[in-house]
Image 1 (cartoon, rainbow, N blue to C red):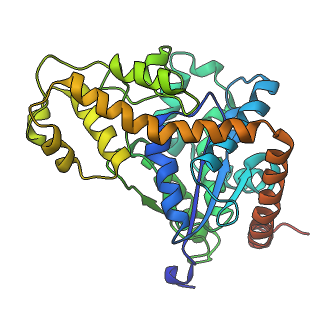
Image 2 (cartoon, one colour):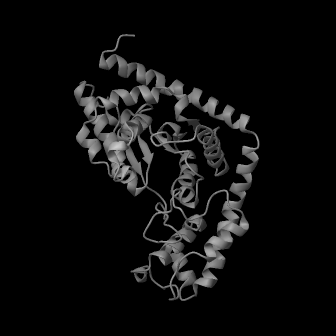
Length: 338
């Protein structure tokens, strides 16, 4: 089997921890919607990854439904893409165990996100937090997915998935059984930064709610957060080269360009020399017009949690139908008797 025989297939997912924000929309969801128009896609709520750190069970269930609602409200179409939550498809966990036995400790020890999340208390971190990159590899390879939309800070995990796939293929003498998934990095705002600090990415875990625009924010909240976004005293530059040392200004320009679907250079030319007060009004308008309909649709969907659960079950059935024969073949290759 040659790599070219693997059917193009996209897999991606987000954790159901805290409310999704503008960075999640511009960096992921907006691109997911575009991808479903031209490729087969699986979009997952990765609730198994969420429990690598302590979670309140009731809050986790509610967050899983909220993230699902955000996917759909942002334009992910369950009729075009397969939408499900990870824990309903046991093939992910089974394949992850096999990958635990393929991956090497040294590989996982180099994962920067583990070091960041575990911090100074590495000895108290869960084993799941250490090995969750193997589960991420299983998420993708359980379907032989060929493409994964990722941010720059996630490329290391995708590289690990490629290493695991290659080692499995080599160890068991099954050339090209698993594809080596490729990253998909698209859009002008794949890395949206904090509204309070342009050197840090927008984060669900930031203590300040003014650092981000949540997908559930109303008109007044969105406008107020943009007005209070940190900038500097100089007017907007007339060239992209003039953003040196001005990360907050550059971040707001990038956000506008992504929301407007316009090249950054076009936006810079449009607002060159203007004061931030004028630009922020325009940014608030386009953010409100884009995000408020998403928040409204999310509220409508969340009013019927049973329907969200049904949607996830239907998606999980489709996902299992794809993953089961692949896992069955993996077990045969490994030598498991069934």
